[in-house]
Image (cartoon, rainbow, N blue to C red; front, side, top):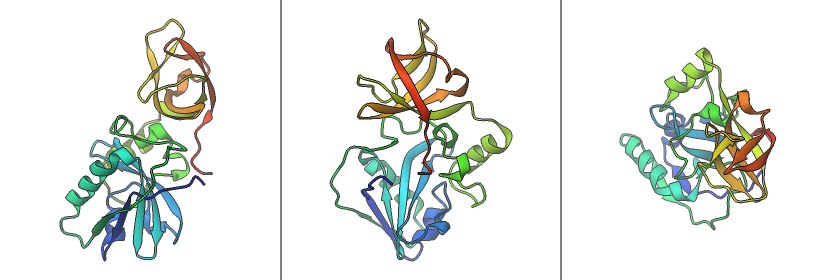
Length: 215
């Protein structure tokens, strides 16, 4: 498990039920001290932030990209008008991302299936009930078949969020970079192209594996 650094504390009588209605996973199933992966989606099912949630007693601690602090805080407050919920910033030391991360530049660009959150329901519950974007996410799950997945890649050069993955001598985009961690990076790729030789800015990249959040 990667080390998590909470950015926001959610407390109050309605904290658990409020988060249950806002995030994609089943908050009611979090064991005390455990971290659970969630997507915070807008109404079209696109992910505003990846949020890891930890329960400590009646309080919940949220970890997400530091540059989404204002966006996430303000949106949660907007939907908490009639709930007894208290939001508190958490003093933390900003550490570079160690794993998959949605940041401000990639916010609202992907749906949960693009990031493998539906696989074994690791980040999405299809039985918990409503949350923003739930209808769209459920429709893709029950009526569609994901055409893109999140993979881990290796390269010896810097890539940036939203850099495009292409085929050789081809301007057609087949994938999009999410974020880089040292010599690896995460990117959403069309499943049909995973066996091809892939490039970013005409430089070859190596596909390592499908990204797995379950360990």
